[in-house]
Image 1: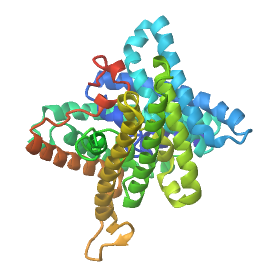
Image 2 (image 1 turned 90 degrees about the horizontal axis):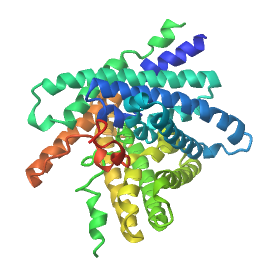
Image 3 (image 1 turned 120 degrees about the horizontal axis):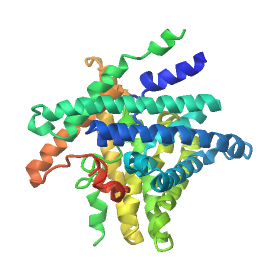
Image 4 (image 1 turned 45 degrees about the vertical axis):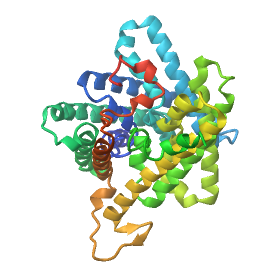
Length: 196
Length: 222
């Protein structure tokens, strides 16, 4: 239990996927203009991360590992994620129209989101158990959501600010991201301290 | 030399990182040192070149509906190949790139070039386009890597620049990466504006994103 809590909070705060591991920067910068879309995107990411971790773990453990095919993990995982995302999109479109309208538009973007592939590969690299993998995926997704929602708030303020001509647009967004990232550096070492 | 343009455009005019704003994840994550930046750049260039060639060769055999998964599979094959090579011949680089070596698969520059260029052009043009874009990517990463290594560690390629300089550790932290990248884009935008009078890109690189058609007008992506 303690181990799971450590994994969860490390993934959310200390090793935040976006701000300290640099995964999923494209959606972080591209979809953070409005709070609503930030929430929709992160909801879709959390869901896909959880499902992807749940599916890739048995494939690795019971298919690749016994056959000495570990080196195929990148290829196998990306295919699983691509197929799964496609499948979810079709199912949602057909049966759960309201959820599709809320999350559907973000799903195709997720296939090429490196945070999703990243979390499945890290689960293997860190030799997590099945449950710990799910906890890690949940933490990574929640961390993504936290970063995205915080940053959407920051950007709404930046939009109203008087920015120097040269920094308008992309540069000021990155500089704002830098400052948000500094705040996350403050969490270093926090989690181990709390659950000791 | 009608193909020369395909080769040179990626280096400066359509530089994937600094002008097109693609591939931001590896750009920020692997540029703490110049050596790892160059390693990442060259590994990506290799994958880009090979995948562009193969995709251009097989473009007529792939049904339109499954083209993206097919491209991803081709790219993943070459990424696995590169990680084998690095693991056996350059283990230290393999260690320092870590998971980002596998994540070349989802680098949007590669999938973007496959979708925008290799699937529409012949092999020679696609190969030159791949090399050009790869060199542009490597140069941009090298530039960011040099700035961060000099300011953050006081060294360049591991060689000290002298005791007079006190390293500013901030620049090798993730936050420093965002800052250096932001300031560089501001510089590039200012030069672009003065030279070509063209408006620089205001948004992150969705124009070249392979899923552009899916989300255009629906999500936040433009």
